[in-house]
Image 1 (spheres, rainbow, N blue to C red):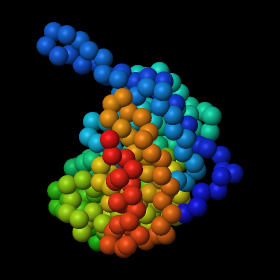
Image 2 (cartoon, rainbow, N blue to C red):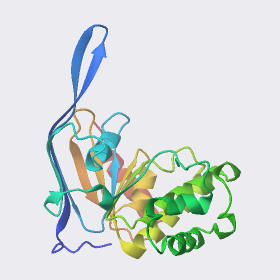
Image 3 (tube, rainbow, N blue to C red):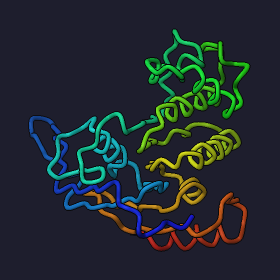
Length: 252
């Protein structure tokens, strides 16, 4: 997808410093996660944040979502402070409420809206789980639970959607189904998506741009725009060629 350069930058991430205190024995140390980190993301882009374990990927999502506001710098949405109403967050585990049905879980963030039941029914249809709408999470497979969590994240029609390795631990067939579902849901409203992964295949398959992070303190090693048309097959020559190029480009 080509991004119109005239579009306003909706997300401006400027982190002067983010420190995580550590205590080793009786000695307190300050672990610098980010220092002079700057990233700008356009309206409707699907960005993958790729990097080694412990490089600050999840911390970055927590800072954007304001779950963690202990840092020096500024993260703004259209030059204004980000409000929670504009953000959706999908974690590594589905985090469904076990006492609610699948349909009720999707409705939960929007239960005060008059059309909440219609929205949840439409989303259940889009994710192919209409007949499981009255099932409780413990009666659903892991893949089904992830689909419900994904539908719930889209139910609020967020401007910004954060995903922290949401398909980790799933077998490749189910994970691929969920990636395709994510792309289909994203295409309808085009929220800005920031997707954390340590799987390069996943990053190439999903993203408009891949942001490669270094080890701590995290910096951007490469900001690469993917030009392969969707849908993208990991078996295609273009895909494999790009994977080799990117792997070589970000070697330490």
